[in-house]
Amino acid sequence: MAVRLCSANYPLYAVTLLDDSHILVAGGGGAARTGVENAMEIFELQGEGKNCVATSLHKHSTDPRAVMSLAAKADGKGHLVAAGMDGKCQLFRITKSKEASDEGEQDVDKASRVNQAGKRGKKTGEREGGKRGRRKRGKKTKSAENEANLRKRKGSTGNKAEKSAEVTEQSSEYKVESLACVDTDFHKEEPFQKVVRFSRDGDIIATGGADGHVRVWKVPKLEKKLDIKAHLDEIDDLDISPSGNKIVSVSRDYHAYVWKVESGKREAELHWDKNVPEKSYRIKAVRFGTSQEKKSTVQLYTMHIPARRERKPLPCYLTKWDAMKFVPVKTQSTGTELLSSLAVSDDGVFLGVGTNSGDTMIYVSWSLQKVHRVSEAHGIFVTGLCFLKNNAITAELTKGAETALVSVSADHHVNLTPLRPRFMVSVWFAVIGFLVLVVVVMIYLGQQGLI
Image (cartoon, rainbow, N blue to C red):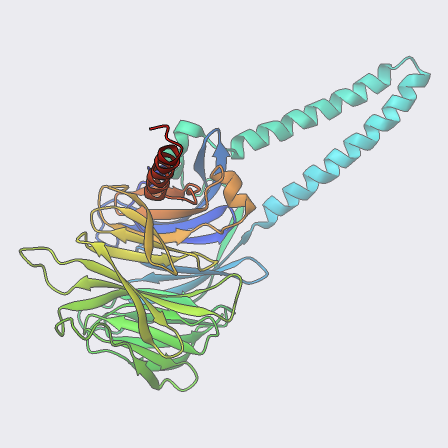
């Protein structure tokens, strides 16, 4: 079962993780003047009873354009956010606002002064019958009440979580600063940046879209580093290798290529199953993944969908690739539901998959075994996925889940799919073990002449 974290009052197309307990979502109605707003919104995840909920902390208007692609990277000052809107990419920096920081410092200073005053009052009160001491302690109690009220206002709202997105620019806790904006797609009819990715070090971003070009930009001024005429049709997805020296792009022209970041030259092409007829499948999404235990171990994952609708639906597939030789290692069918989105957990252990019918699924990356599925988690296709970090904070928020997948959709909802701890021995192995035990007991009793 998926957990409804919250809802927005606009369709959602992208989601990314900011830190352990904050996510950024984005979307909107576009420039059609339909009355649907265009925005990016920061949500804080909080545990409430047995559930996890999300509270809106800040909303930033992106009118008149909707954000269709999104990526974020911490830079020491805050978070850099690259947002794709029509044929443009805009780079923002999100930081804690000075007002919020000052308020936090003032609260600490005030609490310190109250504590000191309380101590002085206590000593004076001991000498003068405790009257002044009680007055000092009264001020301290009022400060504590103010802090409690502040936490209550910032805390989760339970059943009101879905309404939290209705408030715009509701706090000054965050500051969103625009650093640069550039044209990243030059399609003659309809420019559209479909995907943006940060390198692991945050020095560059790569963009791809309707005109088939892969463009690489230097951060933070978005100076163009590379412009590769990569494909003959629009780019569906791309990703930058963990080392930052390679880019893999996939397109509707049925090709998937590996590019060298330094030179822009093509290094390899991904050739899938030789037994599959040409142009019957195309790669919809691509992601690199790294092992948390062995950072040098890099894998590449692709998501394959049928190129055409058939009367009898064809299955979709996940494939794991050797990221050095770029040859397929393992392929797994995901069923006939058309796949829409793909994500890899930060430790490289899990893959997240979304479908056109709104399902969310979690797979083990090394075996491509499906371990969890939520049917119709959303009412329409899943547009974006990201995993929470696999650490103690996530375990506390999700009440001990092995991992947790955040999903967004054009149905306005933000959902969480947690993976509960699995039994080490499957039901089938337990049944087989029980049957073997029965046979052994029967043989033993027969030898003893008891049966």
